[in-house]
Length: 502
Image 1: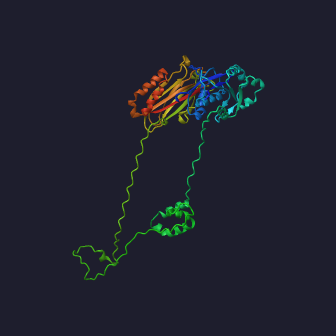
Image 2: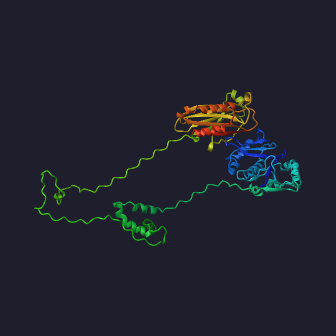
Image 3: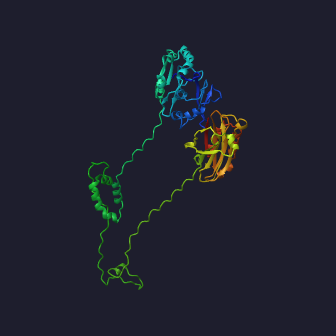
């Protein structure tokens, strides 16, 4: 297969996508400059573009976190979405040409991609074409064919002055959806998530048939009393129901069944006792013996009930199986963030020394432990609260730490914080991170909560040591190993990223 090189069109010039790599799902997606550790300003928006439920990359290609390296800076905006989408599609097919790798084809893209995979128009396309004229010439000299993918609204608005820059080996492909992109690059289309299908309709059971079965199954004296009437009525109205009950066929038209004759127990005819003369009548040898049945026969004053047949003992009722013991899991740790902001238009510093306290907004985590991004405007601190939703006491280790930025100095200093505490059912505990005062870039906080049932906490001192090590060093490189150990020991775990956007 041919390798394809992808260029992101910007007003500062084209930026080559050098590499796309899958990363640990516990971190966030990032766009880095030229293989270095410098994360670009679009990283937070790129993470939202990748990760479910906001993004489309994880939904189509299955993985939630990536690192993408580009050769030149990419500023804010959303026109990078279409080229990075194309890079992910090529990467999934094994056809993305990396840095210094041979490419048989080049693509130049700009545009947005929404949740429905529609391609939207962007601004400054003529300027982007002018800034890429040198690239077009280099590709022409090397005989590498070039395809420019543009939103249809932008492609239709280009004039001859714009298209003359491209050269004879270039073509413009207007896009309304990404489907055309897959077709022109000869890429397999990933299966789109299916909508929920209605459950197959259960086979209908006629309510009258159910009533008929119930009546015939009664088998008591009342059922025997009504048997003739019920059978006559059912024969006239539901011959198929009678065929099913008689076991002679399931489909109509199979022939009439033979009449169902009720089964009666076979009883031997009673034989008359031989006449007994007074001389032959038995004589009780003991005056105190009770009279026999023969003695009572014909006595109108005898009210003794005749003996009845013994009824069989009912089957013993099985004891219900014991309910399984509940197991502690991450879903038992309810996470809530509390945004603490300066009231009105005041700064955080003024609010701290003033008489009006910070306002608080509680934001529960959505499904899967995800947190909605918080705006940094007026945000002074974020408090992370863990509540015990388990039915028994648990011991919780809680850590919150900034990710991807230095600690800072003075009022801009931000430190990680942790604690461990035993919580009764329904109780909560929280830690707080103060925000830097003059942040202009997006950043995130890592929140980790580990829990064990109270009786087991004494044997888990290593958890606290590991948490304090991460807090002190700000090193999450060992997190994957620690997470495996947590899972092996059967501990409950909740780990999330919380984005703070400018």
